[in-house]
Structure formats: C-alpha cells, structure tokens
Amino acid sequence: MATSSRERPISLLGRLLIAAAVWCSCAVTLAAIVLVGLFSRHLEREADAELRDHVVELVSLARVERDGALRLAGRLPGARYQRPFSGWGWQIRRGSQVLAQSPSLGPLAPQTPLLAAPLGEVGLFEGSGGRVLRGLSRSVAPPLSAERLTFSVVRPQDDIDLAVGQYRQSVIIALGVLGVGLVATVLAAFWIGLRPLRALSLQIAEMRAGADPVARAWPREIAPIADELEALRQHTEKTVLRARSLAADLAHAVKTPLSVIRQQVGALTPDQGHAIRRQTDRIAMSLERHLGRRGAGSVPYARIAVRPCVEDLVFALSHTGTEKPIAVEVDVPEDAVFLGDEADLYEIIGNPLNNAGTWAKTQVRIGARVAEQRLELLIEDDGPGIPEVERSAILERGTRLDEATPGDGLGLAILHDLADFYGGHVVLTESAVGGLAVKISLPGDTGAA
Image (cartoon, rainbow, N blue to C red; front, side, top):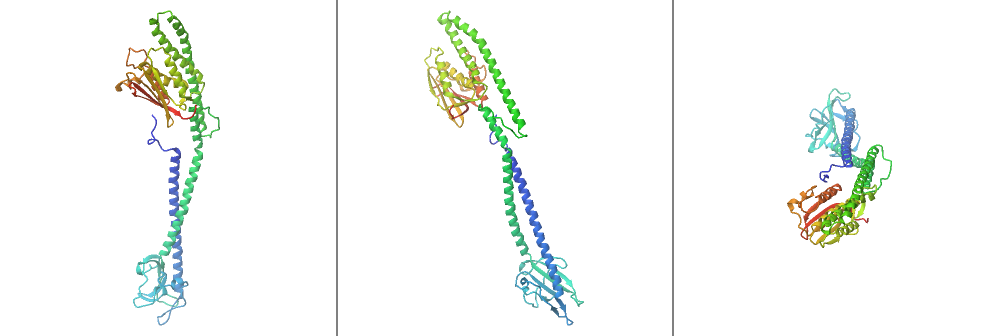
C-alpha cells in the first residue's frame, strides 16, 4: 500500500537542510555571544585602564600646603570633566570632607555628595539621579605630604553599554547575513549533490513508461544502485519474455486440437454443435489474445490507445454467435491512453465486456475518460446485476454466483489482479441501466498514442 503524503517521511534534502540550518544557527549564535562578550570585556578593560591612569595623574597634580590647603598643579585633560552632568568626574576628599572636584560635578558646597566609587578596584555604583557609574577610589598620600587623601575618578557606564549594544546589533546583522548565505550555499551544494538521484528516479520512470534507458556515467556512490536496477530490469524483461513464450507455446499446443474439434463439430446436428461451437470460439478468441502478447516486443510498458482496443473487442463481442440482440454503446475519446502492455489492456477491457455481453438483456455501455493522469473506464449492462453483499466475493478467483451459466469464474478476478498490478483498482456498483457497472481506474495520460 502506498504511503500517504501525511505519513511520508521528510526527504533527504529536507533533512540535510534542517541539519544545516540548525548547525548554522547554533554556530552563528555562539559566534555572536563570543564576539559581543569579547568586545564588551575589551571596552571595560580600556575604561578601567583609563580610570587608573586618571587616578595616578590626579594624585600627581595634587599638593597639600603647610596650612593643610589643597592645591592642584593642573586639571585632568578633556572637556568631559568640564561639562556638567556628563557623568565623567573626579573628586578629592579628606575623610568625608570634599576638598576639590571636577566642574562636571558642580560647585563645592557644605553638603556636596561624596563619590562612592569602590576603593582599590574599579566597580559599578549608583550615582546621583540613579545613574550607573563606573569608578575607582584610592587612598593616597600626595607628594610631600604624610596625610592620606581619597582620590576618586568616575565615568558613565551607559557609554559602554551603548557601544556594546550598537556592536551587538551590527554583529547580529552581519552574522545573520552570513548564516543565511551559509544555509543557501549548503542548500545549493546538497541540491547539486542529489541531482544524480533525481536523474536516476526519472530514468526509472522512463523505464516504466516503456522507454529504453539511456546509458550514462553515474557518480561512484550512485553507480552500484544504477547497476542493480539495470540488472533487475533485464532480469524482469527476460522473465516476462519467457512467460510469454511459454504462454505462446501452450496456446499453439492447444490451437491444433481445437481446430480438429471445430472441424468435427460440423458433422453434428445444429442443436448438438451450437454449444460446442460457442465454447470453441471463446477459447479461440482467448488464444488469439494471448498469442498477441508476442507482438509486444521486449518493452513491457508502452502508451496504448484505448479506443482501437475497445473497437476490436466490441467487434469480437458482436461475432460470438449469441442469439440475443445486444446494442453496445461506446463513448471512448480518441486521446485516452493506457500506460502498460497492450495484451493486458485487452484482458482488462475484454473480461468485463464479455461478462456484460453474457448477462446483458439488450444493452451494454463502455465509456472512458482521462482525469488527473488516470484512465477511468466504465462498463455497464442492463442485466440482473450482482447484490452488493456479493460484489467483493466475485473478485476472488473461481467464485461464481450462477453455476448454470457457462464460465470459469476467473474473468473479474483476472481484471482485479491486472488492475492491482498496474496500481489501479476495480469497483463494482449498480449500473445506471439497471445491471452491473464495473469501474476501473488505471494509469494513463492525455497524450496522443
């Protein structure tokens, strides 16, 4: 039974693409985390080094007079220490008394807030207004002074965070484009790598359609599969030809005794010879169809026009010697095509058509249409039909519902087997004219034969 589209597993290309996408996503994400982390630590190290240098420079500028007053030999360079509320600043204090500070922190006053920068190591703290600052404090005795003063230098942390954020955005965009490019490259590589498999699939489809495979050089990984398929094709072809030869030999072996029987029937009375003559005609017609398999050549699949086959079978049905006046209505388009063996098509149509001719009262219909690359056949009669509960049983070999009627019970069973072989199916329903309707679905197309 064919696997439905919902149950069908993911294709090889899909699996490889998913694996490549997952791998690239993980690699790009990890690379982004590492790069942003390295850049952030680099900025922090640079900021910490600058703060330490400024503390040393500030200490070198400080002088304590004999009266205890603090004098500065200069100022720390840069407008950022001069601009108010810039977040950059320095402060010198004795205990809790602020002796001097940068203009960015405002003028000195009795209640000037202290910069609570960590002592000894650079760290983060919350400044006035809730702004996060990065700073460093050191307790140092200025030159020519035995008194230790606290020197603090700070800078805004949001400058670093802003730079890291902009860098992170740039990295994500760049690595995202790189990741998409990698996935596209992998997809192209897989697509090219799997092309031989697609070519092999097309070659198998051509073989099924009856075309001779074109010899080509396959990649090393595909060559063993292609060789095995070619060997299987040749073996199947030989098996089919041998089976046809055996069938032809058997048909020829029966044909001569059958001819003798038909000659001897002529010596009987009309009533005695009628039944024998009818059955010998049926045997002869069946033998002719089986002998026709030899003409199919070595190609087991071909594109066979349906209408000529139907016309041949209808002609044979009208010359079976039956006494019933049966009208056969044919509605088969010229472009209806069967993909398979011609002899099998004769069996597929001939068996239900003969069955319809046997049971029909006055009318038999045979129609065909092509829809969605499928050949749909419908054979109806106005006979007694088959009860619904017995329709599935009649498709089994040897099952007969009326032992009084001549036949071996194999017609519809053979039809069922052949349809199943070609990936089709048979449905028995009630005919629109009152008897049995045989619906057959087979592979086909709309091309001209």
